[in-house]
Amino acid sequence: MKKVFTRPNSLKRTPFHYCAGCGHSIIHRLMCEVIDEMGLQDKTVGIPPAGCSVFAYYYFDVDMAEAAHGRGAAVATGLKRASPETIVFTYQGDGDLAAIGTAETIHAANRGERITVIYVNNAVYAMTGGQMAPTTLLEQQTTTTPYGRDMRLEGFPLKMSEMLALLDGAVYIERTAVNSPAGIRRTKKAIRKAFQTQIDDLGFSMVEILSPCPVNWKMTPLESWQWIDKEMTRVFPLGVVKDTAGKSNAD
Amino acid sequence: MYGNHAIGEAAIRAGCQCYFGYPITPQNELTEYMATHLGRRKGCCFIQAESETAAISMVYGASLAGARVMTSSSSPGMSLKQEGISYLAGNELPAVIVDVCRGGPALGSIVAGQSDYFQATRGGGHGDYRTIVLAPSSVQELADLTHLAFDLADKYLSPVVVLADGMLGQMMEPLEFKHEAPEVLPVRDNALRGARGRPSRIVRTCNSNTNEIEELNWSLYRRYQLIKKEETSYETFLTDDAELVVVAFGIAARIAKGAIKTARTEGLKVGMLRPVTLWPFPSAKLAELSNKVKNFLVVELNMGQMLEDVQLALGDKAEVSFYGRPGGVIPTPSEVARVIARLYYQKGLK
Image (cartoon, each protein chain N blue to C red):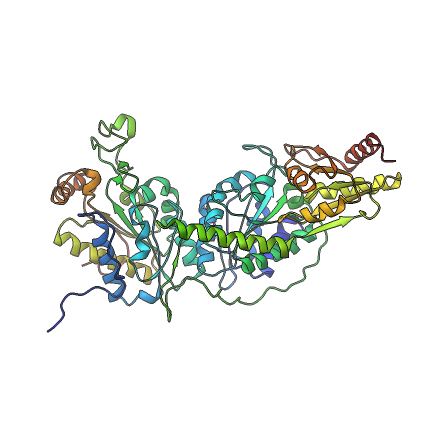
Protein backbone atom coordinates (compact mmCIF):
# COMPACT_ATOMS: atom_id res chain seq x y z
CA MET A 1 0.00 0.00 0.00
CA LYS A 2 1.33 3.43 -0.85
CA LYS A 3 2.26 5.58 2.16
CA VAL A 4 0.82 9.06 1.72
CA PHE A 5 1.42 10.60 5.14
CA THR A 6 4.22 9.95 7.59
CA ARG A 7 6.28 11.50 10.36
CA PRO A 8 9.09 13.70 8.99
CA ASN A 9 12.61 12.39 9.67
CA SER A 10 13.49 15.67 11.40
CA LEU A 11 10.69 15.18 13.91
CA LYS A 12 11.60 12.92 16.82
CA ARG A 13 9.20 10.25 18.05
CA THR A 14 8.76 12.08 21.37
CA PRO A 15 5.06 12.82 22.11
CA PHE A 16 4.37 16.58 22.24
CA HIS A 17 3.82 18.06 25.71
CA TYR A 18 1.73 20.90 24.32
CA CYS A 19 -1.87 21.54 25.41
CA ALA A 20 -4.80 20.38 23.29
CA GLY A 21 -5.44 22.89 20.53
CA CYS A 22 -2.02 24.58 20.79
CA GLY A 23 -0.38 25.65 17.57
CA HIS A 24 3.21 24.77 18.45
CA SER A 25 2.94 21.10 17.47
CA ILE A 26 1.51 22.02 14.06
CA ILE A 27 4.30 24.55 13.47
CA HIS A 28 6.98 22.09 14.63
CA ARG A 29 5.71 19.53 12.18
CA LEU A 30 5.56 22.02 9.29
CA MET A 31 9.13 23.10 9.96
CA CYS A 32 10.34 19.50 10.06
CA GLU A 33 8.56 18.74 6.79
CA VAL A 34 10.32 21.73 5.19
CA ILE A 35 13.70 20.78 6.68
CA ASP A 36 13.28 17.26 5.26
CA GLU A 37 12.10 18.39 1.85
CA MET A 38 14.96 20.91 1.52
CA GLY A 39 17.54 18.37 2.74
CA LEU A 40 18.65 20.55 5.66
CA GLN A 41 18.49 18.09 8.57
CA ASP A 42 22.25 17.63 8.90
CA LYS A 43 23.23 21.26 8.39
CA THR A 44 20.72 23.05 10.58
CA VAL A 45 21.04 24.47 14.10
CA GLY A 46 17.91 25.66 15.89
CA ILE A 47 17.64 28.08 18.79
CA PRO A 48 14.44 27.60 20.80
CA PRO A 49 13.26 30.28 23.23
CA ALA A 50 12.30 30.54 26.85
CA GLY A 51 8.57 29.88 26.76
CA CYS A 52 6.22 26.98 26.07
CA SER A 53 8.47 25.79 23.26
CA VAL A 54 11.61 25.79 25.46
CA PHE A 55 11.65 22.01 25.04
CA ALA A 56 11.47 22.23 21.24
CA TYR A 57 14.84 20.48 21.21
CA TYR A 58 13.11 17.30 22.34
CA TYR A 59 11.11 17.28 19.09
CA PHE A 60 13.39 18.60 16.35
CA ASP A 61 15.96 16.04 15.28
CA VAL A 62 18.53 18.68 14.36
CA ASP A 63 21.27 20.32 16.45
CA MET A 64 19.65 22.62 19.00
CA ALA A 65 20.90 24.94 21.73
CA GLU A 66 19.08 26.90 24.41
CA ALA A 67 19.30 30.68 24.55
CA ALA A 68 18.57 33.22 27.23
CA HIS A 69 15.10 34.78 27.08
CA GLY A 70 14.99 37.15 24.12
CA ARG A 71 18.55 36.60 22.92
CA GLY A 72 17.73 34.17 20.13
CA ALA A 73 18.57 36.53 17.27
CA ALA A 74 21.92 37.48 18.84
CA VAL A 75 22.86 33.86 19.55
CA ALA A 76 21.87 32.92 16.01
CA THR A 77 23.98 35.84 14.73
CA GLY A 78 27.09 34.61 16.56
CA LEU A 79 26.54 31.06 15.37
CA LYS A 80 25.90 32.01 11.75
CA ARG A 81 28.87 34.38 11.57
CA ALA A 82 31.18 31.74 13.04
CA SER A 83 29.83 29.05 10.72
CA PRO A 84 28.24 30.69 7.65
CA GLU A 85 27.50 27.37 5.93
CA THR A 86 25.19 26.28 8.77
CA ILE A 87 21.45 26.95 8.38
CA VAL A 88 20.37 28.73 11.56
CA PHE A 89 16.85 29.34 12.76
CA THR A 90 15.37 30.77 15.93
CA TYR A 91 11.97 29.76 17.21
CA GLN A 92 10.55 32.55 19.37
CA GLY A 93 7.33 33.58 21.04
CA ASP A 94 5.90 37.08 21.25
CA GLY A 95 7.25 37.76 24.74
CA ASP A 96 10.68 36.52 23.72
CA LEU A 97 10.89 38.33 20.39
CA ALA A 98 8.69 41.41 20.86
CA ALA A 99 9.40 42.36 24.49
CA ILE A 100 12.68 41.26 26.04
CA GLY A 101 14.34 40.53 22.70
CA THR A 102 13.12 43.51 20.65
CA ALA A 103 16.57 45.10 20.41
CA GLU A 104 18.31 41.86 19.40
CA THR A 105 15.64 41.14 16.79
CA ILE A 106 15.64 44.62 15.24
CA HIS A 107 19.42 44.79 14.99
CA ALA A 108 19.80 41.29 13.59
CA ALA A 109 17.25 42.20 10.94
CA ASN A 110 18.91 45.53 10.26
CA ARG A 111 22.30 43.89 9.77
CA GLY A 112 20.58 41.54 7.35
CA GLU A 113 21.75 38.50 9.28
CA ARG A 114 21.28 35.37 7.21
CA ILE A 115 19.06 33.72 9.76
CA THR A 116 15.45 32.54 9.73
CA VAL A 117 13.16 33.56 12.55
CA ILE A 118 9.99 31.63 13.25
CA TYR A 119 7.92 33.99 15.37
CA VAL A 120 4.92 32.45 17.08
CA ASN A 121 2.40 35.07 18.12
CA ASN A 122 -0.32 33.89 20.53
CA ALA A 123 -0.94 37.25 22.21
CA VAL A 124 0.00 36.04 25.73
CA TYR A 125 2.89 34.82 27.87
CA ALA A 126 1.64 31.26 27.86
CA MET A 127 4.21 29.24 29.83
CA THR A 128 4.18 31.60 32.80
CA GLY A 129 0.42 31.38 33.02
CA GLY A 130 -1.17 33.83 30.59
CA GLN A 131 0.17 37.29 31.36
CA MET A 132 -0.07 40.24 28.97
CA ALA A 133 2.28 40.11 25.99
CA PRO A 134 3.28 43.07 23.79
CA THR A 135 0.90 41.54 21.24
CA THR A 136 -2.10 41.25 23.58
CA LEU A 137 -5.11 42.86 21.91
CA LEU A 138 -6.88 45.90 23.35
CA GLU A 139 -9.58 44.86 25.82
CA GLN A 140 -8.12 41.32 25.94
CA GLN A 141 -8.14 39.90 29.47
CA THR A 142 -4.96 38.28 30.75
CA THR A 143 -3.75 37.57 34.28
CA THR A 144 -1.94 40.94 34.34
CA THR A 145 -4.67 42.84 32.47
CA PRO A 146 -7.58 41.39 34.46
CA TYR A 147 -9.83 44.29 33.37
CA GLY A 148 -8.73 44.05 29.75
CA ARG A 149 -5.75 45.74 28.06
CA ASP A 150 -6.23 49.50 28.38
CA MET A 151 -4.43 51.49 25.68
CA ARG A 152 -3.83 54.35 28.11
CA LEU A 153 -2.13 52.10 30.64
CA GLU A 154 -0.62 49.25 28.65
CA GLY A 155 -0.25 50.70 25.20
CA PHE A 156 -1.10 48.97 21.96
CA PRO A 157 -0.42 45.58 20.39
CA LEU A 158 3.10 45.64 18.92
CA LYS A 159 3.36 44.83 15.23
CA MET A 160 6.85 43.45 14.89
CA SER A 161 6.51 42.31 11.28
CA GLU A 162 5.52 45.77 10.09
CA MET A 163 8.28 47.35 12.21
CA LEU A 164 10.94 45.01 10.85
CA ALA A 165 9.71 45.53 7.30
CA LEU A 166 11.02 49.10 7.53
CA LEU A 167 14.58 47.80 7.77
CA ASP A 168 16.67 47.41 4.64
CA GLY A 169 18.31 44.23 5.98
CA ALA A 170 14.98 42.42 6.29
CA VAL A 171 14.30 40.62 3.02
CA TYR A 172 11.31 38.38 3.54
CA ILE A 173 8.61 38.77 6.19
CA GLU A 174 5.21 37.12 6.05
CA ARG A 175 2.41 36.74 8.58
CA THR A 176 0.36 33.55 8.50
CA ALA A 177 -1.95 31.68 10.86
CA VAL A 178 -2.34 27.99 11.71
CA ASN A 179 -6.07 28.06 12.43
CA SER A 180 -7.28 26.42 9.24
CA PRO A 181 -6.07 23.83 6.71
CA ALA A 182 -5.52 26.63 4.18
CA GLY A 183 -3.58 28.66 6.76
CA ILE A 184 -1.46 25.66 7.67
CA ARG A 185 -0.57 25.04 4.02
CA ARG A 186 0.25 28.73 3.56
CA THR A 187 2.42 28.70 6.67
CA LYS A 188 4.45 25.79 5.31
CA LYS A 189 5.10 27.66 2.07
CA ALA A 190 6.18 30.73 4.01
CA ILE A 191 8.57 28.69 6.17
CA ARG A 192 10.08 27.18 3.05
CA LYS A 193 10.53 30.59 1.46
CA ALA A 194 12.14 31.92 4.66
CA PHE A 195 14.72 29.13 4.67
CA GLN A 196 15.30 29.63 0.95
CA THR A 197 16.02 33.33 1.59
CA GLN A 198 18.74 32.27 4.03
CA ILE A 199 20.15 29.64 1.68
CA ASP A 200 20.30 32.23 -1.10
CA ASP A 201 22.32 34.48 1.23
CA LEU A 202 19.93 37.37 0.76
CA GLY A 203 19.32 38.59 4.30
CA PHE A 204 17.00 38.35 7.27
CA SER A 205 13.81 36.33 6.96
CA MET A 206 10.93 35.90 9.38
CA VAL A 207 7.56 34.19 9.43
CA GLU A 208 5.13 35.48 12.05
CA ILE A 209 2.59 32.78 12.80
CA LEU A 210 -0.65 33.56 14.63
CA SER A 211 -1.14 30.55 16.83
CA PRO A 212 -4.00 29.54 19.14
CA CYS A 213 -3.58 29.25 22.91
CA PRO A 214 -6.97 27.90 24.04
CA VAL A 215 -5.87 27.32 27.65
CA ASN A 216 -4.74 30.87 28.35
CA TRP A 217 -7.42 32.40 26.16
CA LYS A 218 -9.93 30.33 28.19
CA MET A 219 -11.58 29.01 25.05
CA THR A 220 -12.19 25.67 23.42
CA PRO A 221 -9.78 24.86 20.57
CA LEU A 222 -12.54 25.59 18.07
CA GLU A 223 -13.32 28.97 19.67
CA SER A 224 -9.64 29.85 19.64
CA TRP A 225 -9.41 29.17 15.90
CA GLN A 226 -12.42 31.42 15.35
CA TRP A 227 -10.94 34.14 17.62
CA ILE A 228 -7.83 34.32 15.42
CA ASP A 229 -10.02 35.01 12.38
CA LYS A 230 -12.42 37.39 14.11
CA GLU A 231 -10.09 39.35 16.39
CA MET A 232 -6.38 38.71 15.88
CA THR A 233 -6.21 39.11 12.12
CA ARG A 234 -7.92 42.51 12.42
CA VAL A 235 -4.88 43.77 14.30
CA PHE A 236 -2.35 41.45 12.68
CA PRO A 237 -3.45 41.12 9.04
CA LEU A 238 -2.22 38.04 7.20
CA GLY A 239 -0.06 38.17 4.10
CA VAL A 240 3.40 39.00 2.82
CA VAL A 241 4.59 42.03 4.75
CA LYS A 242 7.82 42.40 2.84
CA ASP A 243 9.53 40.51 0.05
CA THR A 244 12.59 41.92 -1.65
CA ALA A 245 14.05 38.49 -2.36
CA GLY A 246 13.64 39.21 -6.05
CA LYS A 247 12.63 35.64 -6.74
CA SER A 248 9.38 33.76 -6.91
CA ASN A 249 7.14 34.41 -3.93
CA ALA A 250 6.11 31.75 -1.46
CA ASP A 251 3.56 30.44 -3.97
CA MET B 1 52.39 48.98 22.68
CA TYR B 2 49.17 50.44 24.01
CA GLY B 3 47.58 48.16 26.64
CA ASN B 4 44.20 47.71 24.98
CA HIS B 5 45.89 47.03 21.63
CA ALA B 6 48.14 44.42 23.26
CA ILE B 7 45.06 42.49 24.41
CA GLY B 8 43.66 42.53 20.88
CA GLU B 9 46.90 41.48 19.21
CA ALA B 10 47.39 38.68 21.75
CA ALA B 11 43.86 37.45 21.13
CA ILE B 12 44.42 37.33 17.36
CA ARG B 13 47.69 35.48 17.92
CA ALA B 14 45.84 33.04 20.18
CA GLY B 15 43.58 32.21 17.24
CA CYS B 16 40.57 34.30 18.23
CA GLN B 17 38.15 34.01 15.30
CA CYS B 18 35.23 36.08 16.47
CA TYR B 19 34.94 39.26 18.51
CA PHE B 20 31.71 40.93 19.57
CA GLY B 21 31.87 44.25 21.40
CA TYR B 22 30.07 47.39 22.41
CA PRO B 23 31.73 50.76 23.00
CA ILE B 24 32.53 51.64 26.59
CA THR B 25 35.43 53.59 28.08
CA PRO B 26 38.21 52.72 28.97
CA GLN B 27 38.39 49.71 26.61
CA ASN B 28 37.35 51.26 23.27
CA GLU B 29 40.78 50.91 21.69
CA LEU B 30 40.47 47.13 22.03
CA THR B 31 37.16 47.04 20.15
CA GLU B 32 38.65 49.32 17.48
CA TYR B 33 41.75 47.14 17.21
CA MET B 34 39.60 44.07 16.60
CA ALA B 35 37.54 45.93 13.98
CA THR B 36 40.73 46.87 12.16
CA HIS B 37 42.78 43.71 12.52
CA LEU B 38 40.33 40.81 13.02
CA GLY B 39 37.24 41.86 11.08
CA ARG B 40 38.62 41.19 7.61
CA ARG B 41 40.71 38.11 8.39
CA LYS B 42 39.71 34.96 6.56
CA GLY B 43 37.23 32.89 8.57
CA CYS B 44 36.96 35.58 11.24
CA CYS B 45 34.27 38.04 12.19
CA PHE B 46 33.80 41.27 14.10
CA ILE B 47 30.47 42.78 15.10
CA GLN B 48 29.80 45.96 17.02
CA ALA B 49 26.68 44.72 18.76
CA GLU B 50 23.63 46.72 19.82
CA SER B 51 24.36 46.15 23.52
CA GLU B 52 26.63 44.23 25.86
CA THR B 53 23.80 41.76 26.36
CA ALA B 54 23.64 41.11 22.64
CA ALA B 55 27.44 40.95 22.37
CA ILE B 56 27.77 38.22 24.99
CA SER B 57 24.87 36.34 23.37
CA MET B 58 26.76 36.46 20.06
CA VAL B 59 29.79 35.14 21.93
CA TYR B 60 27.62 32.28 23.16
CA GLY B 61 26.45 31.57 19.59
CA ALA B 62 29.97 31.60 18.14
CA SER B 63 31.21 29.37 20.96
CA LEU B 64 28.38 26.95 20.18
CA ALA B 65 29.72 26.84 16.62
CA GLY B 66 33.16 25.93 17.97
CA ALA B 67 34.98 29.21 17.38
CA ARG B 68 37.58 30.82 19.61
CA VAL B 69 35.70 33.92 20.67
CA MET B 70 36.18 37.02 22.78
CA THR B 71 34.30 40.04 24.02
CA SER B 72 35.44 42.96 26.14
CA SER B 73 33.83 45.63 28.23
CA SER B 74 34.19 47.69 31.36
CA SER B 75 32.34 47.59 34.66
CA PRO B 76 28.76 48.73 33.81
CA GLY B 77 28.91 46.71 30.61
CA MET B 78 30.15 43.67 32.53
CA SER B 79 26.99 43.79 34.62
CA LEU B 80 24.98 43.36 31.42
CA LYS B 81 27.20 40.51 30.26
CA GLN B 82 26.57 38.43 33.36
CA GLU B 83 23.45 36.84 31.87
CA GLY B 84 25.41 35.41 28.97
CA ILE B 85 28.38 34.41 31.12
CA SER B 86 26.04 32.27 33.22
CA TYR B 87 24.75 30.59 30.05
CA LEU B 88 28.32 29.97 28.86
CA ALA B 89 29.26 28.46 32.22
CA GLY B 90 26.11 26.35 32.49
CA ASN B 91 26.41 25.00 28.97
CA GLU B 92 30.16 24.40 29.35
CA LEU B 93 31.25 26.68 26.53
CA PRO B 94 34.65 28.39 26.31
CA ALA B 95 34.96 32.14 25.81
CA VAL B 96 37.28 34.95 26.85
CA ILE B 97 35.78 38.05 28.48
CA VAL B 98 38.04 41.05 29.10
CA ASP B 99 36.96 43.54 31.77
CA VAL B 100 38.93 46.77 31.63
CA CYS B 101 37.57 47.73 35.02
CA ARG B 102 36.72 51.26 36.13
CA GLY B 103 35.45 52.76 39.39
CA GLY B 104 31.82 52.12 40.33
CA PRO B 105 29.13 51.74 41.45
CA ALA B 106 26.60 52.75 38.77
CA LEU B 107 28.07 54.82 35.95
CA GLY B 108 30.98 55.70 38.24
CA SER B 109 34.26 56.97 36.84
CA ILE B 110 35.89 56.11 33.55
CA VAL B 111 39.41 55.64 34.88
CA ALA B 112 40.98 52.66 36.63
CA GLY B 113 39.23 50.77 39.39
CA GLN B 114 39.20 47.34 40.99
CA SER B 115 35.67 47.50 42.30
CA ASP B 116 34.50 44.45 40.37
CA TYR B 117 36.60 41.83 42.12
CA PHE B 118 33.49 40.33 43.73
CA GLN B 119 31.58 40.32 40.45
CA ALA B 120 34.42 38.59 38.63
CA THR B 121 35.44 36.04 41.26
CA ARG B 122 32.01 35.03 42.59
CA GLY B 123 30.58 34.03 39.24
CA GLY B 124 28.78 37.33 38.74
CA GLY B 125 25.64 36.01 37.12
CA HIS B 126 22.94 33.70 38.43
CA GLY B 127 23.64 30.09 39.33
CA ASP B 128 26.35 28.14 41.06
CA TYR B 129 29.36 28.66 38.85
CA ARG B 130 32.83 30.18 38.79
CA THR B 131 34.91 31.74 36.10
CA ILE B 132 38.67 31.59 36.00
CA VAL B 133 39.85 35.17 36.62
CA LEU B 134 43.27 36.35 35.46
CA ALA B 135 44.68 39.64 36.74
CA PRO B 136 47.43 41.19 34.60
CA SER B 137 49.75 43.76 36.12
CA SER B 138 51.62 45.04 33.04
CA VAL B 139 51.11 45.40 29.30
CA GLN B 140 53.27 42.29 28.81
CA GLU B 141 50.92 40.39 31.08
CA LEU B 142 47.85 41.76 29.30
CA ALA B 143 49.15 39.92 26.25
CA ASP B 144 50.40 36.79 28.03
CA LEU B 145 47.30 36.29 30.14
CA THR B 146 44.94 36.97 27.23
CA HIS B 147 46.66 34.17 25.33
CA LEU B 148 46.52 31.92 28.39
CA ALA B 149 42.83 32.75 28.83
CA PHE B 150 41.98 31.19 25.45
CA ASP B 151 43.89 28.01 26.30
CA LEU B 152 42.29 27.71 29.74
CA ALA B 153 38.82 28.35 28.30
CA ASP B 154 39.23 25.51 25.82
CA LYS B 155 40.90 23.21 28.35
CA TYR B 156 38.13 23.56 30.94
CA LEU B 157 35.21 24.43 28.62
CA SER B 158 34.55 27.51 30.67
CA PRO B 159 34.36 31.28 30.30
CA VAL B 160 37.57 32.97 31.45
CA VAL B 161 37.67 36.59 32.63
CA VAL B 162 40.73 38.79 32.18
CA LEU B 163 40.29 41.45 34.88
CA ALA B 164 42.37 44.42 33.80
CA ASP B 165 41.73 48.05 34.65
CA GLY B 166 41.59 51.43 32.97
CA MET B 167 45.17 52.29 33.73
CA LEU B 168 46.62 49.09 32.27
CA GLY B 169 44.37 49.42 29.25
CA GLN B 170 45.44 53.02 28.63
CA MET B 171 49.17 52.77 29.23
CA MET B 172 51.97 52.08 26.80
CA GLU B 173 54.87 49.71 27.48
CA PRO B 174 57.26 47.61 25.43
CA LEU B 175 56.29 43.98 25.15
CA GLU B 176 57.13 40.82 23.32
CA PHE B 177 54.57 38.51 21.72
CA LYS B 178 55.51 34.90 22.23
CA HIS B 179 53.26 33.45 19.52
CA GLU B 180 52.53 33.92 15.84
CA ALA B 181 48.91 33.98 14.74
CA PRO B 182 47.81 30.54 13.49
CA GLU B 183 46.39 30.26 9.97
CA VAL B 184 43.04 28.65 10.70
CA LEU B 185 42.31 26.78 13.89
CA PRO B 186 40.56 23.41 13.68
CA VAL B 187 36.89 23.43 14.68
CA ARG B 188 36.36 22.25 18.24
CA ASP B 189 35.13 18.64 18.52
CA ASN B 190 31.79 19.42 20.13
CA ALA B 191 30.89 22.28 17.78
CA LEU B 192 27.24 22.67 16.88
CA ARG B 193 27.15 23.14 13.09
CA GLY B 194 24.54 20.64 11.99
CA ALA B 195 24.40 16.89 12.62
CA ARG B 196 26.42 15.67 9.63
CA GLY B 197 27.51 12.05 10.10
CA ARG B 198 26.39 11.93 13.72
CA PRO B 199 23.17 12.03 15.74
CA SER B 200 21.77 15.50 16.45
CA ARG B 201 22.91 17.14 19.69
CA ILE B 202 21.21 19.38 22.21
CA VAL B 203 23.04 22.02 24.22
CA ARG B 204 20.89 22.97 27.17
CA THR B 205 20.64 23.19 30.92
CA CYS B 206 16.87 23.62 31.15
CA ASN B 207 15.25 20.42 32.28
CA SER B 208 12.25 19.41 34.31
CA ASN B 209 14.43 16.71 35.89
CA THR B 210 16.19 18.44 38.80
CA ASN B 211 18.44 15.42 39.36
CA GLU B 212 20.05 16.12 36.01
CA ILE B 213 20.70 19.76 36.94
CA GLU B 214 22.11 18.70 40.29
CA GLU B 215 24.48 16.38 38.43
CA LEU B 216 25.54 19.28 36.17
CA ASN B 217 26.38 21.32 39.27
CA TRP B 218 28.41 18.45 40.71
CA SER B 219 30.23 18.07 37.44
CA LEU B 220 31.06 21.78 37.41
CA TYR B 221 32.13 21.57 41.06
CA ARG B 222 34.56 18.73 40.31
CA ARG B 223 36.00 20.73 37.42
CA TYR B 224 36.41 23.78 39.67
CA GLN B 225 38.26 21.64 42.23
CA LEU B 226 40.59 20.51 39.44
CA ILE B 227 41.14 24.11 38.32
CA LYS B 228 42.00 25.11 41.90
CA LYS B 229 44.58 22.34 42.02
CA GLU B 230 46.11 22.90 38.60
CA GLU B 231 45.82 26.57 37.70
CA THR B 232 46.35 28.68 40.82
CA SER B 233 49.03 31.20 40.01
CA TYR B 234 50.76 34.05 41.86
CA GLU B 235 53.97 36.06 42.04
CA THR B 236 56.01 36.59 45.20
CA PHE B 237 58.33 39.56 45.62
CA LEU B 238 60.91 39.76 48.44
CA THR B 239 58.90 37.53 50.76
CA ASP B 240 61.81 35.39 52.03
CA ASP B 241 62.79 37.67 54.92
CA ALA B 242 59.63 39.76 55.03
CA GLU B 243 58.05 40.86 58.31
CA LEU B 244 55.15 42.46 56.47
CA VAL B 245 53.63 41.11 53.27
CA VAL B 246 51.53 43.28 50.99
CA VAL B 247 48.80 41.45 49.06
CA ALA B 248 47.69 43.25 45.90
CA PHE B 249 46.70 42.45 42.33
CA GLY B 250 46.75 44.18 38.96
CA ILE B 251 47.68 47.84 38.85
CA ALA B 252 47.54 48.09 42.66
CA ALA B 253 50.30 45.48 42.84
CA ARG B 254 52.34 47.51 40.37
CA ILE B 255 52.01 50.57 42.60
CA ALA B 256 52.68 48.54 45.75
CA LYS B 257 55.84 47.12 44.21
CA GLY B 258 57.22 50.62 43.83
CA ALA B 259 56.28 51.38 47.42
CA ILE B 260 57.97 48.20 48.65
CA LYS B 261 61.19 49.11 46.85
CA THR B 262 61.13 52.47 48.67
CA ALA B 263 60.43 50.74 51.99
CA ARG B 264 63.34 48.36 51.42
CA THR B 265 65.72 51.30 50.94
CA GLU B 266 64.63 52.43 54.38
CA GLY B 267 65.43 48.99 55.78
CA LEU B 268 61.85 47.79 56.20
CA LYS B 269 61.48 44.08 55.52
CA VAL B 270 58.44 44.20 53.28
CA GLY B 271 57.47 41.76 50.54
CA MET B 272 54.48 41.12 48.32
CA LEU B 273 52.20 38.32 47.24
CA ARG B 274 50.47 39.13 43.96
CA PRO B 275 47.68 36.75 42.94
CA VAL B 276 47.76 36.28 39.16
CA THR B 277 44.66 34.11 39.30
CA LEU B 278 42.03 35.81 41.44
CA TRP B 279 39.91 32.72 41.09
CA PRO B 280 41.28 30.26 41.95
CA PHE B 281 42.75 32.36 44.76
CA PRO B 282 46.22 31.43 46.12
CA SER B 283 44.89 30.72 49.63
CA ALA B 284 47.36 27.90 50.27
CA LYS B 285 50.33 30.14 49.52
CA LEU B 286 49.01 32.79 51.91
CA ALA B 287 48.52 30.18 54.62
CA GLU B 288 52.08 28.97 54.04
CA LEU B 289 53.44 32.52 54.29
CA SER B 290 51.58 33.01 57.57
CA ASN B 291 53.79 30.36 59.19
CA LYS B 292 56.54 32.99 59.21
CA VAL B 293 54.82 36.31 58.58
CA LYS B 294 52.28 37.61 61.04
CA ASN B 295 51.34 40.92 59.40
CA PHE B 296 49.68 41.39 56.04
CA LEU B 297 48.52 44.54 54.28
CA VAL B 298 45.94 44.30 51.51
CA VAL B 299 46.07 47.15 48.99
CA GLU B 300 43.21 47.52 46.51
CA LEU B 301 41.47 50.15 44.41
CA ASN B 302 38.20 49.44 46.23
CA MET B 303 36.92 49.33 49.78
CA GLY B 304 38.07 45.79 50.53
CA GLN B 305 36.98 42.98 48.25
CA MET B 306 40.01 40.69 47.82
CA LEU B 307 40.51 41.52 51.50
CA GLU B 308 37.79 38.98 52.30
CA ASP B 309 39.62 36.21 50.46
CA VAL B 310 42.83 37.09 52.31
CA GLN B 311 41.02 37.01 55.65
CA LEU B 312 39.45 33.65 54.74
CA ALA B 313 42.85 32.24 53.82
CA LEU B 314 44.60 33.49 56.95
CA GLY B 315 41.92 33.10 59.59
CA ASP B 316 43.42 34.07 62.94
CA LYS B 317 46.95 33.05 61.99
CA ALA B 318 48.00 36.61 61.12
CA GLU B 319 46.84 40.22 61.37
CA VAL B 320 45.37 41.68 58.20
CA SER B 321 45.32 45.43 57.56
CA PHE B 322 43.78 47.20 54.60
CA TYR B 323 44.41 50.26 52.45
CA GLY B 324 41.95 51.01 49.69
CA ARG B 325 41.25 53.87 47.28
CA PRO B 326 37.86 53.41 45.60
CA GLY B 327 36.01 55.27 42.89
CA GLY B 328 38.79 55.48 40.32
CA VAL B 329 41.37 57.23 42.50
CA ILE B 330 44.86 55.84 41.95
CA PRO B 331 47.33 56.22 44.82
CA THR B 332 50.99 57.02 44.14
CA PRO B 333 53.76 54.62 45.20
CA SER B 334 54.96 57.16 47.80
CA GLU B 335 51.49 57.29 49.32
CA VAL B 336 51.42 53.50 49.66
CA ALA B 337 55.02 53.61 50.99
CA ARG B 338 53.87 55.94 53.77
CA VAL B 339 51.03 53.52 54.64
CA ILE B 340 53.53 50.66 54.74
CA ALA B 341 55.96 52.57 56.95
CA ARG B 342 53.25 53.68 59.37
CA LEU B 343 51.88 50.14 59.68
CA TYR B 344 55.38 48.71 60.05
CA TYR B 345 56.11 50.91 63.07
CA GLN B 346 52.59 50.62 64.53
CA LYS B 347 53.01 46.85 64.62
CA GLY B 348 56.42 47.24 66.23
CA LEU B 349 58.14 45.33 63.46
CA LYS B 350 61.45 47.18 63.33
